[in-house]
Image 1 (cartoon, helix red, strand yellow):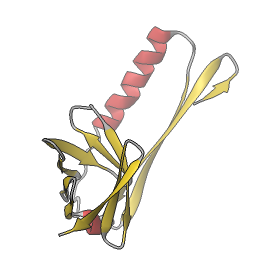
Image 2 (tube, one colour):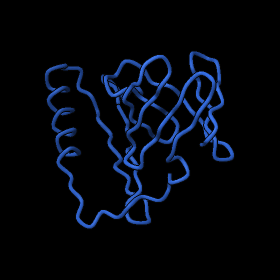
Image 3 (cartoon, one colour):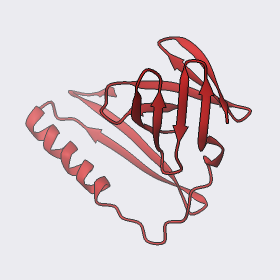
Image 4 (cartoon, one colour):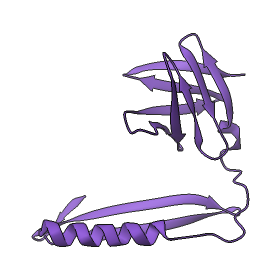
Length: 134
C-alpha cells in the first residue's frame, strides 16, 4: 500500500506456474476513502479472480523439489504436490504452502521457510530448524 492523493493505493501481484510459463495477475486498487465503496470494489475484484478457471491445466514442475516429507527432532513437514500438507509438531496441522511460507488452513499461523540442498529450514518464532528430506 502507498498514499495517492486523498486515498491509498493497494497493489497486489498473484503469480503462478501455468503450463511451463508464469501467469501473473497484477491488481492495483485506488481507494476512495469511503469504506463501503472500497469494500464493494475489493470484493468485486476478488470475485473476478475467484471465477477464473483453466482448461488443460498441466502438472506444475517449478516446485517439484519441495514435494515430500521432511523430518527433524522437533517434528515432520509433509508438502504435497497440490500445495497442501501437514505440519506435525505437537499436533498434526493441515497447511497450505507457497514459495517461502507455510500457512495453517485455519489461519492460526504462518511460518517462513527456505529450501537448501533439498532440505527445508523452518522459522519457528525466530528460531530456524533444519528438516531433512526423507
